[in-house]
Image 1 (tube, rainbow, N blue to C red):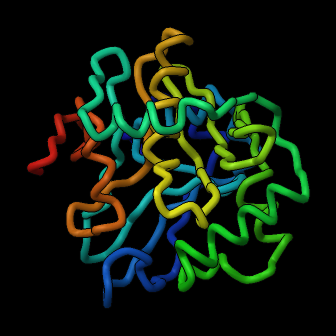
Image 2: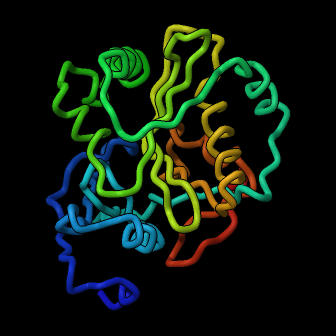
Length: 243
């Protein structure tokens, strides 16, 4: 674990999970390396771990450690240098009436109702579309990191919820779900643009958008936000739409 000598290794242990089916690449097996105990990992420590390709889901802190694949690349957008393209500018203008408010992690019935509609419409085979309230709470509403929940409303109607971690050098997008029954809406694009704008207002450098996989269509949108960098072999290198 010498690669992690910039964090207190004595406070953490690391283990490999058993192989499990990859959610993004068909017929591939995935494995994760997990940092434990997650409950000890605060924002300062997580800000360092994320530089070594770790991410979090609830209090579960992990990074890909697959036997035959190294396709998961952590991606971040350089906020100060970002310039929206024409399509992104249209999405920003389209949803100009959205009002965002920041909150600590909290639970409301309308959040869960929106979450279920989103999962059933957008990820029907993803395993999170069943009526499992406890799994939802564990996934989104538990955190040892400095985390905010953002409500996006239009004329008082909840349209989108985003969970964001506050890091030492930027914002880390944890998860966003939104109204799926408005086919012309582009809430996901607007949300990334909003996070980039918030990052700038806070004088932070990066918006971390999680893992990007070159051959996964679900993740292709992430390189549309330029300039972007990917963590490859321990170094941040430019990622373009042509990567």
